[in-house]
Amino acid sequence: MVRRIRISQRARSVSPFLAMEVSERAAELQRSGQSIVHLEFGEPDLETPAVVVEAGIQALRDGKTRYTHSLGRLELREAIVAWYKRRYGVDISPECVVVTVGSSGAMLLTFAALLDPGSEVLMTDPHYACYPKFVSSFEGIPVCVPVREEDGFQLDPEAVEQKQSRQTRALVLNSPANPTGAVTGPERMKELVRISEGKGVIVSDEVYHGLEYDGESHSILEYSPDAIVINGFSKLFAMTGWRLGYAILPGSLIRPIQKLQQNLFISAPDFAQVAAIAALTRTEDEILRRRQIFDRRCRLVLERLKQMGLQILAEPAGAFYVFVNIKRWNDSSLDFAFRLLENAGVAVTPGIDFGNQGEGFIRISYANSEEKIKEGLDRLDNFLHAEERI
Image 1 (cartoon, helix red, strand yellow):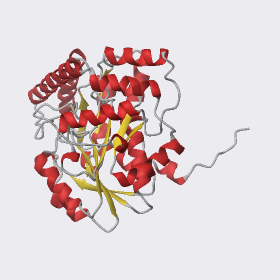
Image 2 (cartoon, rainbow, N blue to C red; image 1 turned 90 degrees about the vertical axis):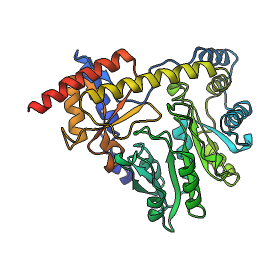
Image 3 (spheres, one colour; image 1 turned 90 degrees about the horizontal axis):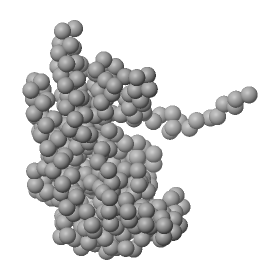
Image 4 (spheres, rainbow, N blue to C red; image 1 turned 120 degrees about the vertical axis):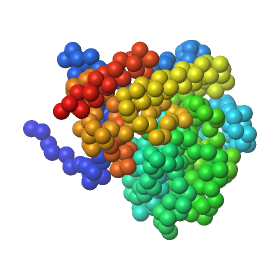
């Protein structure tokens, strides 16, 4: 006899992560023998740098398999501090850094500490698909600020001001941004800091830092010592499976988040922390080479899309995504994505995954080999021609 288990209302109300829905269907098609080109996920195809892997293996051999300090290894926190000093010229104490199980872990701990039921968190629309779910997990309310293709998907400070209320607790800033690749410049950051004073803390997701193709990213900490930074090792260092991230916190949040870490996660994996020290201190040349690879792929994708007649009003300046307007072919990005998958064997992410403003777009990830990208774009080109004939 199977017992019926009562599922919470919160669990029932969570919407599916559509990129996963597409990917899981793509896996089914592959098992049946169909050729699939994956352009849906933001996971680098490049391997973790060899020096990082060797550091992780040696750490395992040295018995680095136990709990660490709840804030993380001091040596890693010092390496993160040195990284931010070297790249952004900001001074941080290692005591203001907490190492977490992925950057998602850092985000969850942050919102657990910040939010009460009914607290509002401002974010762009489109936005990373999981932001609203992080917020609603703690009974917070996601409040979307639309950003538009014709404006380069840039967050407008005046629009942010109009959305602020007495319940506003935070503003999420993501630069370079997922899914659009937009990079927020320093003057706009300064203005966002100004209008947020006394009206919530800025939570800056900097996980795509280091993957910029037109100048350098700026950290929010250059303009506000009271902001919160979320970062990790998955994207720049191709360490998705190592599950390691961190938060840089203002002093008032350190102890609350440390206590949450102690109770929920205890600590991040020790051997992964040792490997991350190598990533921050021994990969400079390799990171530059990888950045050039992604830049070349970005230009390849943009050139081919334009040849297909797709107008890209907002070219990405960072990350590894192109957000493509497909309204000429289909108003439903989900229907378009599944038609493309079933009929052409190309997996992309439907724009509706990223909010209402993402409807009518698809996200193409170029975190795949040039060979696969070219094949996927050829298939997309043929698919678009076929759709026009219907």
